[in-house]
Image 1 (cartoon, rainbow, N blue to C red):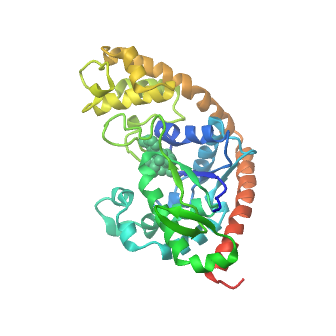
Image 2: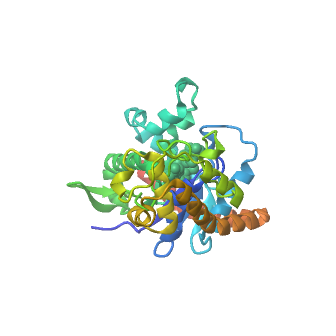
Image 3: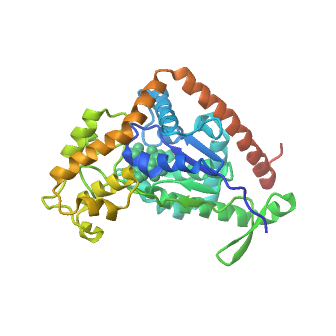
Length: 354
Ligand code: AQP
């Protein structure tokens, strides 16, 4: 029995303003994982083309996600920070995975259905194939752990299915190369080239919801800016958005059970808990019985306290784009070296002549 070398990989699309959901659901976990792991964090710019081909200011979008990574505390020297388009091996492996993945699997992806909307015939082929590229992003480094928000769970299950099918279909070709690892999947022994990735979804806020509708996730592409707190929002904007956030007329309950059927209250308490590093129960033991007119100002203060330093550092970094670009170039070179090693092995396993 062998073992895959632990490696953390995750990505964020440069498709708009990063928001509190991205921060609490993903980036804060990225920061925490750095301490004991080898980590790679990627600005997935190829993915940004899937829903919208032409972007007004792609370089600024890419730099602003990078600035958010750095401002949140990711160390680009100890770990690797890069943008996807600097490593063409992602796209090459994605093509191979397009031939591994089955149409039936892709047809089940709920994010495609959500993003394509009613006019599915007009969605790009890239949007449909997005999860296959995501699998390649992760597996081109044979990464083992992927911190993401809950919305990405289904894509990571697909990544496991793709890895499993590749491993099984090519098992007899993998074996003689000596590159595989003996693992058991369920009860089944498999000589695997690609690991079965573990999603790291748990955390204080796996799903932050819109401030305007507690049943919809907070999203960069929501047309209403009042629905989300952006990492670049200043204190006034944060305060205005929280004060205008939808709530119900009741006071906060004293127990977590009392949040059932109250999605907006549940969301705001969840945000408070995540920002304060507390449980919802702890937050309710402090605010149970209080009206939103008391709770919201406390949430405003806490949000500003946590986000203001990140916001200030992002602005400082964004004023020096050449530094950000140098971080991405350095990370890109280190990522390419790792990705090319995998691709050479994959080319040999498949039997491409090189
Ligand atoms: N509301 C959320 N709560 C918790 N986590 C979230 N994430 C996104 N929204 C929430 C997590 O953030 C990471 C980066 O997301 P992404 O930009 O790559 O893709 P996304 O999930 O499509 O994010 P958005 O904001 O919803 O963007 P648009 O509107 O462009 O689709 C991921 O780990 C994601 O889970």
